Amino acid sequence: MKRLLTLALILGLFAGLQAEGDGGQYRLYGKAYDSTGIALRHEVIMFIVRNDTIKIKTDSLGNFETKITWRTFDQTLMTKDTNVQEENEKMNPPIMVIWSNKLISIHNRWEEAQYASYKGNWVDRPHDLYFK
Image (cartoon, rainbow, N blue to C red; front, side, top):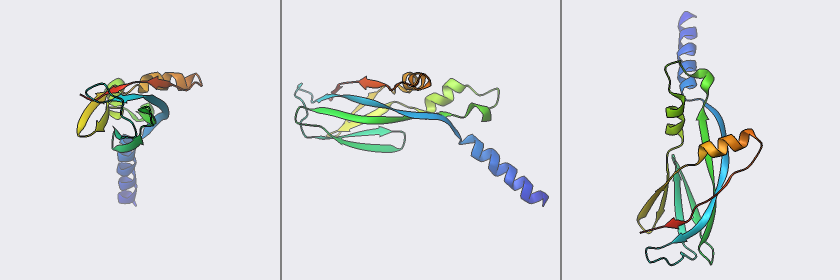
């Protein structure tokens, strides 16, 4: 019985390390351009957010739109030595955007979205993409 309780406690602690606190989404939209400044029309762009890959097809004008999911760690399960800001940054790395073997890294605006969600608002984040 003691072994079973010990095992349950250890598994519970491990699960706590992986626990997520808050989370939500924000909308990222804009126009995509190639290296010559021409809009990418009807092209597939891949957004990589953590381990998730989102494929988006631009419209006839080169416009795109996607939702970015953000997450934070559950602060009630962290120790006093844990740097909460640092852990949240690890959960929300920069967004990688790929088109035609070209890579762009853009800032993940999770903090702005988190703050807005506390106020009951939705964040729309314009960001044009320039693949050089």
